Picture (tube, rainbow over the protein chains, first blue to last red):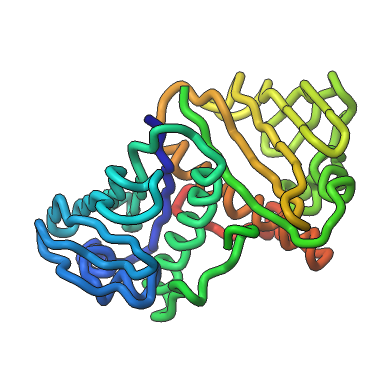
Length: 144
Length: 144
């Protein structure tokens, strides 16, 4: 099993604000996938459009969000997308994990770069009020 | 052992041009670390400034570059930074690996996001002639 891992920080921002941008569908729609719908409560199914759906496994307010992918690309099924939020010297830090890939296939390389694009879109959304969710996201290669 | 992996593509560009931007110190200085110096021949030591040095392990023209870190952050010593270049339907694809981390420490999360920033700087340099090497790089968190 291999994992995609990323880290961003937002200076002088309350963890509550960062958590809300990750744990609610309205938040996710502002930085990852623009047409995110579904049930963002624990146990609910989030629909990210583009045939990606995930179950909300854990919501620990202001600290952790854990989704398990239940529909999507074959390589994504059963993987977990996790967000750990904590304070560090006046910054709020977000650790992103996309965990449990069976193999480090080339598609995982692509998704790793795309997750960086999206987690930096989260940072930009929190800092400026405007993110670049799909379909506004930067295309990194021929898989978009 | 865990690896950082990324993928970018540049449309309609010869692999030779992409390879030169990765395999030469002048190329690296345009997208990763602005004051890269040293010996970029196979067996040579590249000096990336900021106390990071790497030995050039392999140069396979237009296909592969492999550096082994010999000086730098503790977690980097002995890791390999690899670039695999290939053609895919009119695109030149670059697979970046920063391979052989002992543990998926928080610093690795940070470096994964920073490698995305830099490999996208390589893409931008190749497409526009201007990259954002250190110290022009996007800061992703409190570790910069």
